[in-house]
Amino acid sequence: MKTTPDFDYLFKLVIVGNSNVGKSSLLVRLMDKSFENSHCTTIGADCNTKSIKLGETTCKLQIWDTAGQERYESIVSSFYRGAHGIILVYDVSDRKSFEGVSKRWLHQVRKCIHDQNVNMILVANKRDVPDSQRMVARWEGEILAQELNIRYIEASAKSYVNIERIFTSLATDIKSTIGKPNYVPLNSINLAHDKSDQHYGPRPRIRRRCGC
Ligand code: GTP
Ligand code: MG
Image (cartoon, rainbow, N blue to C red; front, side, top):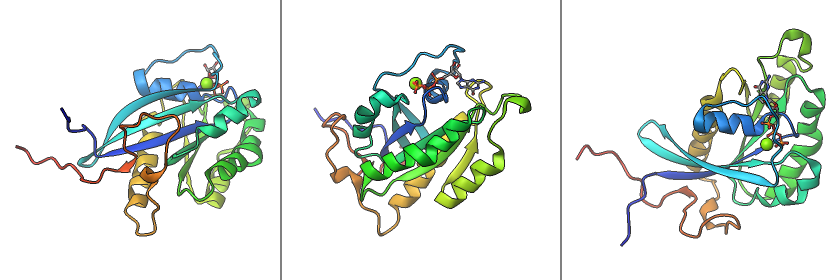
């Protein structure tokens, strides 16, 4: 028996950034609102799904939290396939992680994504750290985001600041991109890591709340 899906859109998002910047912490905060002070490094990638409301539509987000350690680079590269959105994360108290966005992650995204139409967002995590520990100024992040023509958000997984905003902003951007005539539908792309019965991008028929 065929069941009606409980979402209007399904978006694949991939979180990338150097090891220790807080990628897993941001996702765990989104999923169950908890926070761990210890660092348990991600091996390969983890996946979670979360439904969010954007106006009247429900977007199901399939979120891939990837490993920042270089030894997993080739595995991580394979997770970009079919992605609608990339969350580029750095740690404001770690200058190398900020440099890593330009030197490493953007290269990897461009190399792996080719002709796919993908939205990105730049996240400066750990904004809770005291000024004396801050190594990347807000303006530096803002300038990088401007150059890339993407959004910039300062967040803290620890203090629970702007967690939902990261995901709703990116989903909003993806949804508006999909509405544009030059959008290349990504649901035609085969997704190596996803179940065959899932649909990516806009569903053929948009389910609307009708109150009946
Ligand atoms: P990899 O899986 O190795 O790529 O690392 P990751 O980017 O997933 O980092 P993870 O989420 O495991 O967090 C690394 C460390 O940073 C942990 O000790 C967290 O407790 C800490 N951390 C994460 N987010 C924040 C934050 O917003 N503020 C502060 N002060 N610490 C944080
Ligand atoms: Mg991790």
